[in-house]
Length: 285
Image (cartoon, rainbow, N blue to C red; front, side, top):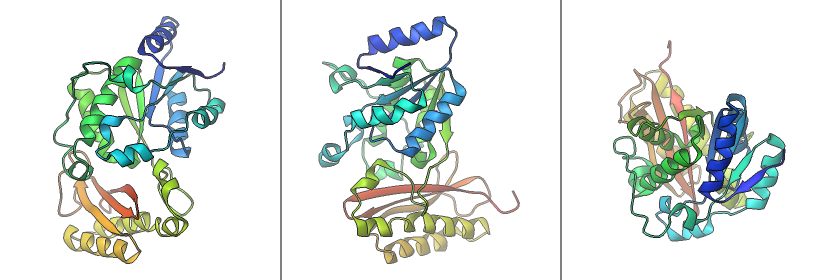
């Protein structure tokens, strides 16, 4: 069966209703397009869990706090559809802004706690935009499960919190970060790196890995994180937004690894902002 491209909520719900009558499970993979292997790994995970897979493609203006960043975000629907075709995706849901945020739209979903600090501190309003559009996509699709990558770890926790709080009956599944051979986490923004910046970019993953090893061995957070920021600057990053150790569930800062933890970083190379993270597990656990 060929990939269907649907653009209205009514058409999407009609299609899902047909699947429901046949007793089929539905998985959804929310994206903003510019698909890469990281997205396709989510599609494969969805196919393992459900008979039907929906991929959504919507460049959500509400999660951008910078107009130039929104304008520069790649829009490659035809290429994305071609990449999805071999994976047995049933529907590409690609609504326009008017379909998602019609005349008089006045509702915002805001998640406190896990949305604060880290990317939330540096991108005001970003997670309100994420929470609002994800709530809509889950309700529009009525999916049994939704797949999100762990590269956007704070986003994953925001989505889990909103689903729990709003009683949305969709299982949220986090999938491992997919990386290039040199360790750089796949991202749609990587195409904006110059050749020289691309050469420097893997340092963020390398420094995360080295710092995670030190913290897992019992090193206190403050000196480890200070050394990590200095290492990124020495590797040629223009600015380190944050390099922090947080509780893996609450994202509250912690001083040492005596519980499941996450090491998270965001830094700039030229005009491109890179984010990455790794789990940190105490040695012996």
